[in-house]
Image 1: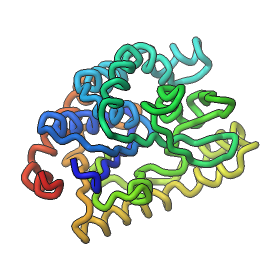
Image 2: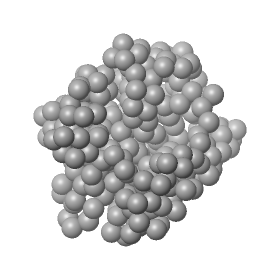
Image 3: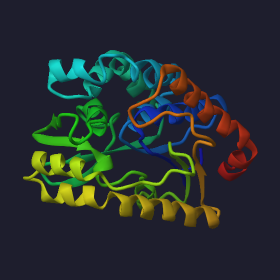
Image 4: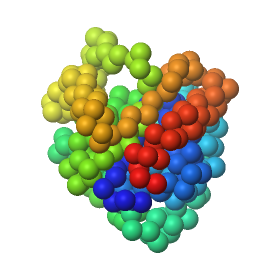
Length: 285
């Protein structure tokens, strides 16, 4: 794959099944990016994509996220958190992680996983296949503020990098990539809105010692719009392709039936297939 190209993956919670389906299409068509940058739940899927473990991604994105141990009263009683990505990692991801690292290490590739460092209140990027405790960065990237516990790595406490960036197009550009395939999980009718007053009330109580984190949460709409405007500008210049759901399947950030989530997985695959000629021409393959 031409090293001028970067693959940019948005998170999206349960909607991440769309990304998993789109990534399967890339592997099925022999398209293997040498650079991928991910945020939030997309970190799991980007990692397995680069290791060509599409069945693992399907299992996580459809069966894993609908497992009753992931969300709700179960993890709240057991771990004190309403959402347990730790359970997801331990039961659906870790079993093939060594195989994935071995595959990725045999390639000249790089992956950036965005995480928010609570100690410094700054976004950081880490490569899980090159760094010590790399898999923990994937867990941290999926640890959402207010509903997940921070993940401690080498003395630092980390949460989801989506606190400050949702579509890491600027990171792909900063790392020297000239063209970008961007996959997001919201259809064109989606409009990002600020957190509700009650959400911010609780977040301010939980993170009262972290003023920069709270500032980032207040700015998320503006940051997201800036990122999407950047993608739109790059599209006009012929330097990006944006892939997003062609329709609404009824899957929300943390809602949707197993059937709906499975449907969204295959929608990701089909949307890529429907634009196959455009994608192949853009990627020069």
